[in-house]
Image (cartoon, rainbow, N blue to C red; front, side):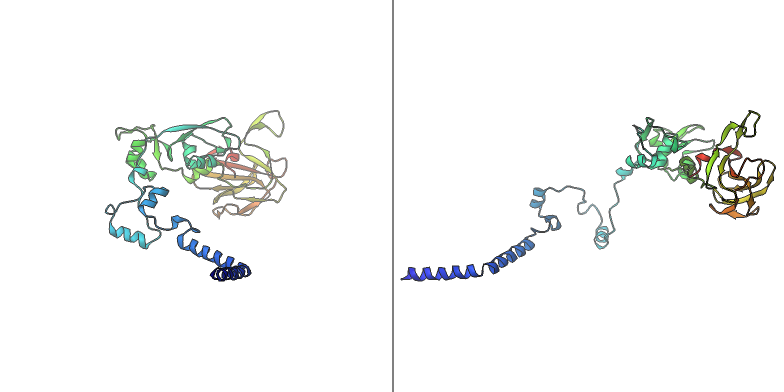
Amino acid sequence: MSDIYNRMFFLKIGKVCFERRQDILRLGLLLCICYALVTGFVWPRASFSLSPAEAIEVGVGGGGYLEGTVSSDFLQTVEESPVAGIAEPESFSKPRTLLYSTYTVAKNDVISEMAAGFGLNQDTLISINNIRNTRLIQIGQVLRIPNQDGIMYTVARGDTLESIAKKYSSDTAAIRTANELFADAIRPGMALFVPGAQLGWVERQEINGDLFIWPASGTITSNYGYRPWPFGDNVRQFHSGMDIGAPTGSPVRAAMSGRVSSVGWDDTLGNHVVISHHSGYRTMYGHMSRVTVRSGAYVGAGERIGDVGSTGVSTGPHLHFTVYKNGVTVNPRTLLK
């Protein structure tokens, strides 16, 4: 008789389970999710503290400081401030001897990207390889790649290691170590590597060809340097600037900020303007049809100073643009952005 009752009981249980099977499955799924959240199955175990045994099993490393090796006050500061940290070991930044590897320039290489790829700033590659114009590096050219940032410096009369270090915010010990100097005695003409030093802004812009903006929009009709005399006689002439052909009345703009040092007329240059800039630079703008600035005025880079014309000795409307560096002409094309 009891077997009949037991059978009937289990049949009823089975019937109920079958009829409520979806509810039972939902309950089971909910219990599984709760268990996973409690045990950390869903979130990475790394978000919880590990016991020493667990740490050994999953693999962790050093990189910490044992109690007693740093002050309790400092540890409290670290705990209270999310931005506080521990200073790097002195061995990480100690002076290093200058060493080189080499790299061969490939197609589409540019100095800034090459420097970034080697973990250096572009000043370092420019100075170490004595690059005077970054636009002229050649495919196949072999560059020296140093193991640290810095620039080369030629010792001048009266220089000391201390004065050089102060000038470039470097360190005498770093200079001594990088150059493997066994004494502080240095002599004029000696080439020294100055760790951490950078080029001056003007020198960097000169080398990258980004010092001046274009003074006029147009086409280069005559470059800097020797050319046939455009007015016949079959002779050559040294052209002291660059001619930019543009329609009469087109704006002429200051290529760099500075002070207008001269406004006038010349039988050859016609109406012209001269602007004095920093670092020994001076620019001249010739053959203008109209001048809109006065001598002594300060002008910003890109400010309009007059209009393109064909005054003086000229075959047609254009701007003659000359750049002087410490009183000597230089090729404007190498300095224009």
